[in-house]
Image 1 (cartoon, helix red, strand yellow):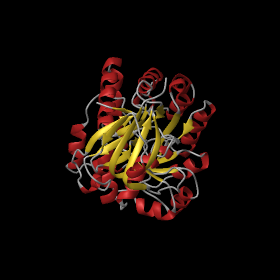
Image 2 (cartoon, helix red, strand yellow):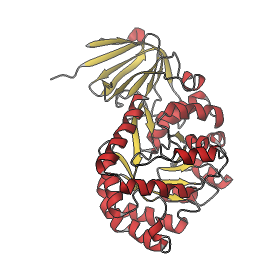
Image 3 (tube, one colour):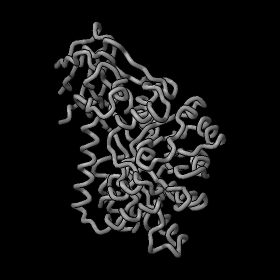
Image 4 (tube, helix red, strand yellow):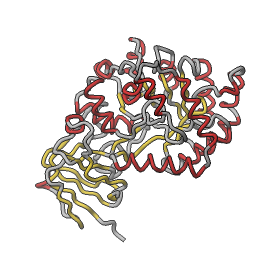
Length: 391
């Protein structure tokens, strides 16, 4: 049985992000059309040359973009930390220890409660144009709680990350080495079947270089590819370690040394910037311009989590990228789509060239630039995932 085809025509601006272009190369076609066959893009080009299809959708001059790819999110948790946010906005300084508040609530929650919250946030993401996302464990910090977090995450995405090394839980405060042994041993064994990635919070107040190396090395022995939280609270060894281990991404990158920038620019490790965290903590924003000018590959992601970036909106992060990270509108959109795909090593998403997965969004706007030009306005008119319209 042949697959049905859909022609989307009269597209004002079709952002294709051709995957064979160099990192950061935004690509678009004006007065365009796109054909979907099954779950794949079959053709793109000028609307006047579009082939026939079984169905036709008139985009009415609107922009069509690849679905957003959110490569950093923490969606399995319980509890509320709005009071902590309010205190920060009133002047209290951010420190990593707030994670333990969420750990206590998550341990106390039932599977059904965690699943309900997870599915609600995943639904928010999809409705706002995010068609691919990563999800971490990290709020259980016991073998059983990390394993159930990873298993729940695997229900909604194939991009599951083991983050047992988020912080040292209170019960191991006097024995952090014992906790690292747990993370590298029984906890890893329980979580690995559900995960593709391993991550570690390499930061003061969390895990140092030797501990991070041990965790990521153990993950590699179980087939989990490395990514790393690096240099969020201050300069540190995380970015250098990420490049050394061939990590897919170094995430946050808020405090960069010249050596960090050079290392990222000369490697395949993506610098994943999370401006929602700086918005919520009032820390300095990372310098995307410095990374881009050096030739590093940059992704934007939400860092959706209950403590420091409780947003599921990639459009919001695009606007922050343009306004506060000094990116052009083209760079920010590329980083939120193709950049995120590179951070997840997913050649099938983040672009709309023939053969790509048919994940796309139609904006109630004629250009991608409106995502930053009209911040806070719900511009997503339609979302397609695997060739099917959602909602």
